[in-house]
Amino acid sequence: MDGFDRLNGYRPEKPALAVLVSGVASMGLEILAGRMIAPEFGSSIYTWGSIIGVFLAALSLGYARGGRRAPRHARISTLQTLLLWTTVYVAFLLFAGEFLIRQSGTLPIPARYSSLVPVTVLFGPPTYLLGFISPYAAELSTAESTGEASGRVYALGTIGSIGGAFGTTYVLIPTLSIDWIGLFFGGILLFTAAWLAWPDRSLRSVLRIALVVALLIGAVVAPSFGMVLSGNTVYETQTAYQDLRVADQDGVRTLYLDGVSHSALDLSDPDRHVFTYTRYFHLPLLYTEDVENVLFIGGGGFTGPKIFADRYDVDVDVVEIDPAVVSAAEEYFGLEPGPNLSVHTMDGRQYLRETDTEYDVIILDAYRRDTVPFHLTTTEFFDLAGDRLDSDGVLLANIISAPSGPGADFFRAEYRTMETSFADVTAFRTAKPGVVQNIEILATTQSHSLTTEELRERAETRPIGYELDDALDRRIDTVRTDDVPILRDNDAPVDALLDPMLGQRYVVESGASGSPTNETMSTAAP
Image (cartoon, rainbow, N blue to C red; front, side, top):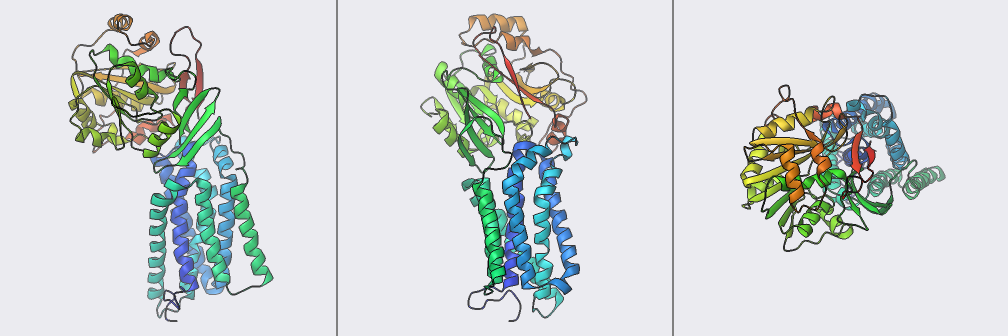
């Protein structure tokens, strides 16, 4: 055979298949790593930088080590052994990955570097082993020159990586759970190892493969070691954007996205705002009257939009980028789109560009504690949002930050940015000062700034239906903005602004919303 990439009765040569599969597995595991790490460490630029860096480093070490060993050790049986050990490690990360990731979060490491530990431990070794495949395959090649052999190896490995990237992104993650995705990659590695062993039917070869099969299946069937979940899981899936889970606990149904609670529904009292900050969504009604059209950017469990549609005589549009979130809200949170509640599955900024509807209130609820879509934070975005408001319209942005001290950089930069687009901007904290929490920044097109007393008078006379006195008590009087940037499309250092918050407690107050005398409980998301 002239070159290992040719076919013999439609059967690819063994080293070629090993290279192709190693490319598929390495890139697929890299994308899978992002999904496994995100619930504990988020999906910020630091997390993805760690993942990409570790995978490149592990592959480079494998290439270098494999290249030195190839002249003496490159054999088909060695390729099989490498694939089997990689499969064993895939089984290990499926079984113990959840536990190790959670334990890594407790290590005394600066927050921006903390994801390096679990990524290195869980994904470094299998990627390192896969790095041996290409130099061994080049050594086994029957190509006439070193350059030809190397070129074929590079091409096959890259083709495999392309297939792994697209297949994982567009097929596996939207349809399978993490365990089943891991089983898929372990399975193709195992199948390739068995193919390399064929036609060797010795007892040793059969037992090796059978043992790895048992380990891989056992890792998927057995409960994940150390797995801790809040509540009784009602539904769970991997979407194109995030890990989604719906859980019930103590009569409250909660939507978790990448392990963080994003929406909650009191099953016995659907009109109650479980989280305090969602009650602040009614603050815009103190600033404007005769509200007819309301836009929510970000749906979550749709509890806020549903309450607006049911309680007030308004038309509500909701823009939610993840169709799986919409489906979960319909199935588990009672979302029923109708004449006065419309759902648009698309990006929020894209919707604002395309719509010609003029809104009285826009509620921006699309930020996460660790990952913020920067294109929804810039002065260009807020200029666009302002153009879609009527003459006395109000925009409320629900952000996660500290109101002062360490961790307040993002809040202060967003506040300053909104001041460039709106005539009046004010903010309300939702928990005690000094902690990372939800902060509601309210911006209006009106030049007159309402005093807290004026807002109290309106709260007493307008039929809002929710107590807002505690919200008004938490109005932030002054915000220092002279040392933070204005966020623009070509310069929005959002990740750097979020960085000081990493590792701090995120406090979400929850409790009854109808009376300020009710006791409030503080819960912290890690």
